[in-house]
Image (cartoon, rainbow, N blue to C red; front, side, top):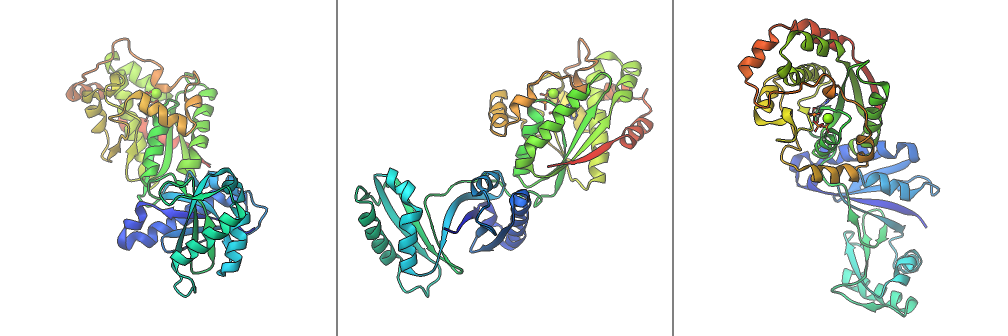
Length: 389
Ligand code: ATP
Ligand code: MG
């Protein structure tokens, strides 16, 4: 039997004049996610997106699994495509729904007729089809209030569709509709989650990672690459930018007071990330910071890093507890990779007594010893970029 996937758009249905842009972006994103699975016809009508495999051998379970992770989809389901002819609807419904109906005790039918030229009205479709189902599955009873299974029949423009309940999609809004942002990604638990959360709000990511070889290893870099790959089913294709940071860190260690090491290093990260972000048409930076989590995430420390750049810095985890963050990281399957014990450039040369309440004036004074423009320029010159996902 011919099947397709129906996607219900979420919030995007509310976006007035932007609706077309949102729906078209969503369709483009779906197309890209399914590209490697086979050919699909993807089209829209009445705030539903239709995802129709061009070939019946295509693995629709896998297609649903991929579409479950596409932001902008509120709900989705598989459905049988049938002719707009009641005989065909009856015949196909009992075959298509047999596996679920055999396991159910109660059911009801809901019909929607957006094609008003169809000769039967919705209540009539429900009654007639309900009767046919009862004839075929005599163990079933009708329960219109709390049925185990609801059978939906939708008579639409191009065909009729039969399906059971939809399941919730990834929510959010389609990636790309809010522009792009540069995610400062470490190998930790937090930053991949921060990236996921901002992708959900329609941002396309450029992942920026700082490395300090030989203090950080090739394994540590590979771990971050793996994190990006694991994020890609949710966050889409992303640029992955690796920034050499060793010289800057060595220079900070040499020239600045030890207790300011972390804060100055973080300010340099923001400054360099901002340059890269501008080059990649990003409108913001994203970090995985959360108030009070570590010494560099006190309010005074955040205040000092915040003024290191002009772009808005988005910190979606700012008010979250670690266990809340871990829950999301397990859901998006980055957790097990994040906890692998590789070093991050933030953990090399960490001072014994970092300033938890750094004063900006003193930080700026300490930074005067650095040749800022030269070191930033050199780091940006040394970046390596690849595409992931
Ligand atoms: P995470 O779990 O994301 O590593 P964290 O709790 O370990 O966060 P920090 O190490 O202080 O906190 O890092 C705070 C934020 O700084 C990270 O969430 C990330 O956005 C950014 N960051 C840290 N290290 C790097 C790095 N090597 N490259 C790019 N960004 C980094
Ligand atoms: Mg970290």
